[in-house]
Length: 331
Length: 255
Image 1 (cartoon, rainbow over the protein chains, first blue to last red):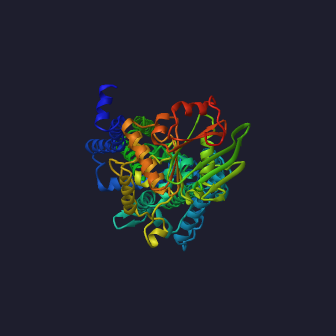
Image 2: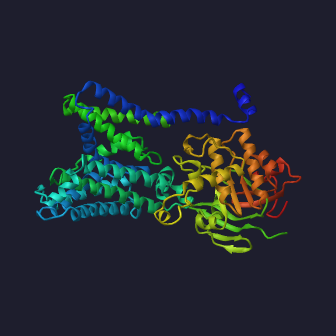
Image 3: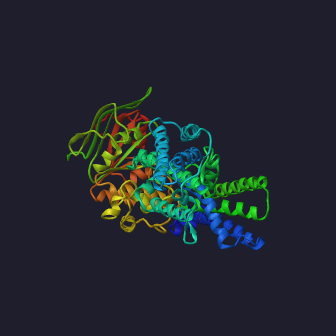
């Protein structure tokens, strides 16, 4: 018996606990490493640019990030189960044109178009989960097919052109203000709080983690796996529908191609936020941080007059860095 | 002799061309630790899955408390008070020990909140701490994620979960495989304590000294059939190994 093993034996604990300690350190850095990076970016941008650290600009960052943010939060639920939803960007387009088409008359309210947009999102979520649960199709392939179909439907529905001239009550959903705070920011904060609550404080939330951690185990202890999967794809679709409606409201017009490629940006944000691509671990908090990190970096690069070509490269580098950090953490 | 608590009668289970169980019998009595041993491929895991509702035998009968039962799902077995500690532990890594203890059986807040699935986290944490304490299991902090616990601590959580819910039978599949010396001793201690509550503890193990140390009886499987049963008193390591390998020829009855 080696000296160390003997000592741990005599002290009545095994070597596993030593492992536990270095794990905890890793978890700590893994959890707060991203916060540190965020803070560094924040401080550097505050120091090097005059326009960054102003209330207007920071609200602007949150506002600009919130569309991707809605998608990323929905995707967090899906990805925690080990799934993926590629259709969210296309849902933004479809929900946008459907809702906008009911907001064109001057007398149109905001609620009916909103409800229709959300319904579109829910229906897409229902189709996704149906293909995955009943059809046994891999989430990647199921939602890839639905992406294409939803985008096609958006083009058919809108005749391929933009839907413009939307009513004032509708525009409030994306561009309105509550006092000094944009409606969009209020919505985003509300969605974040509700999502965090659902994941942390409800049985459904725990089951989401359990399904992603190990489907068979979850099933064995009595978790209804199909109900969990249905739930996460509905949530993801609903939030994508919401994103589509508020985007159309914000720019006062719906483009059937709106949201093209947003799914990749949102997936990046979720992964940067520390959610495992294979499910089981991650958080809404992390995703919000990922979304905000991307938002702050893009905003900073704009303020520093960096052209958009370079911005894409930087966005990719941030993703690589975050993935490496997560790998090291779980290694 | 008393009625067996759980009994397998002539179970047959075939996977494709492989006959995992060929008329296997098994008996567990209340308040005993019975070891189920056998070489790799003897059918131990298949037998456990048939007796815990994870899979269903093609032929044969399962008897529980003197009545024939059909265990069509793990949930059904759990309702009868039958629990399993799986070799892979079946824990959700990102949840804390208390959440894992109550996974699939969460306690809800009373009233409307509970209707919406809102958890009573404090009560679960309290009851979990009590359950861990009762088994002499110490955890650094009930709020830590399982993924940051050591192998031994995870094992403790898995054992505690099954023990907390098992009111009749608990199957433990290699429960000490990942453990150090001290924790192994602790798990064996837990098994004795659970047995003393009147629960049947079924230990599946390759570790013969461990079997000899904790079991009251031993049942041996070979090639999908029960080939021997021993009372622990007077049995030797050679007997066990002999029965497992077929060197010692004993029939289904007591040797």
